[in-house]
Structures are given as C-alpha cells and as structure tokens.
Image (cartoon, rainbow, N blue to C red; front, side):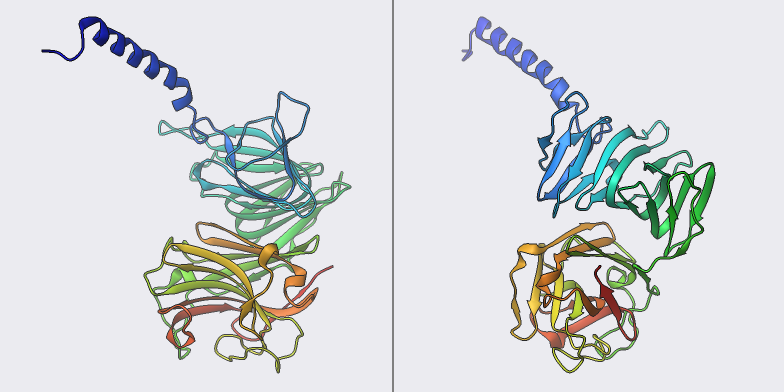
Length: 379
C-alpha cells in the first residue's frame, strides 16, 4: 500500500517544481559566470560605492563588484579583488579604483576584457595569461592608460594625476597623448598630466634573479624545486608599511608532505651590522639577521610571522600579513616590527626543510641576491 495518497504525491511534485524554479536565478549567478569581480581579502577601512547608490558602504569578503562600482582603501588599509581566471588587483592604502568593463571569454570564443579606472594610490596587478590577442587588462588614470598581458604591473597615481607604471614581469605598456611605450621588465615609465610617457628607466624597487639557481645544504646546485626558484622581487614602502612581492619559477605548493616545511622569507639586518644576529654565508651572505619575516607551509597549514633572532620568538604580529596567487607570494608588515628601522639591509630567501624546526635538514633553497645584500630605505 502506498505511503502517500494521490493528492499528497501531487502536492510534493508541485512543491518540488516551485523550489527548483525559484533556484534558477540564484544558482545561475556566480561571480565568474556573470563577469563580476569579488573582494577576496581586506584589511582596515575598505569601502564600496555601488553604481546605483551615492552612499559608501563597508566592504566585505566575497562582496561582488560590477561595472560602475567603486572601491577605496583608507589609511593603513588594503584590499585584494579577484577577477575571473585568477587575475587579481591589490589596492594599497589610500587607493581608489572604479570597475569600468568586465567581459569574460567563453568556450565559444571571444575576448576577456578587464578595464579599471585608478583615480589615486598604488596597485599591484597580477594578470593571468591572456591567450587571445584581443584580450585586454587596462587601467585608466587621469594622465595615461596602462596595460598588461600575463604579467605583474605596478601602477602608482599621485594627487596631481602623475602616473608611474612599473613592469615587474611580462609584457607591460603605457599610452598617453597618442604615444604608446613598451616597458621592459625591471623598468618603469612616468607620465605627467598632459604629456606623453617618459622613456623607461630602471625601477629601483624591482630586483631580478636568475632562474634555475637553487642549491642544497652544501651549496651545490640542485634541480626540481622550481617553486623555490626566485625570479624577481619588488619592494615598496607606503604609509609606514613595507611590502615585498616575490615571484617564483613555479606555483607555490598547496601543501608540503609532513614533517617538512617550505618558507619564503625577508631576512632583515635591522642594525646593518653583520656581527649581530644570525650569520650564515650559505643562506645570509654578508648579513647578520636580526629579524626575519616568514610565510610558511607545513602540511596544508599556512602561517606568517616576524621572528626576533635574539630570542627566536615571534614579535607582535598584528602588523604582518601575506597573500598568495599562483607563483607569487606577497608579504607586508609595519616598519617598526623590524627593529623600528626605516632603513635596513636584507635578502629574500626561499627554502625547504625535511623537518619542521630543524635547521640541519635543509633540502633546497634560493636567495636574492646570490651575493651581497639589498638595502631598503623608506621615505
């Protein structure tokens, strides 16, 4: 005998149809499918103005942005917006951008187009490879239009509209007054309002590193660790915060087999004195490491902290953050976490150990620079 009567069955079927139909609009709207962009991380005061509203509202993680929306970061704030296909834009403190156009290529063809307007501030643009020749990722500023195809571009806009475009990796160009300039890797071009782009000049904040130069615990060359192989590093100092962007030769691993650990570090000689702090000619060159800022992966656990080498203990880590995207890791921290110094010597280090907490089990590493050190000076 049937558990439900004919009318009960009919009612259940009708309710199922209504429920399924009501799901269609919501289920079909995904950020990637609709060509929207999504706020994927934020810190501090980040606000959004929607196209249909003149009011500013507090941004939140997973908030969807559409063409016509504006997002801005306050003092000591940061935000990362992720587009379809993994392209990201990082807004540093005091930055404002508007979403102008979003078009996603489909399996049937077409081009991917991402166009933004940057009114002021600093952004780091990490663009996934655009395979279609008609695809575009462009940022319009008050004085220029900057574009990138599958690389990392830094865009800085001053209060008067002066724009500086820097190529950290890949193909980057800038156009103003009908003149287009291609910017080589490690170079930047400055555009004054009403003027064409200036010829590219070496960018002081980008440091390049040879590929395939990883080494093992005795300093001998070793292969097979491309995710430790540093390609370049960009450094920036804005509003009391140091920011390091480390580009690798392969994607960062999602996990590390226990009991091993992978680290990406900024090794800081805060007092510029090799006789204090940790010393190692193999790893630290001519530096005495007083502090190091690390991003680590052990198993699937990810951590970021600042360590005082005098005590081997973490300092107040409220001002240290990280983000990762494919082959790029970004680490930023307040200047006073490293000995209250606005000027210090440093190297960038990538390393892997076969056992967490055991410095004798170094498997492979890479460092930038290979000899000597770099100097960071905040203005």
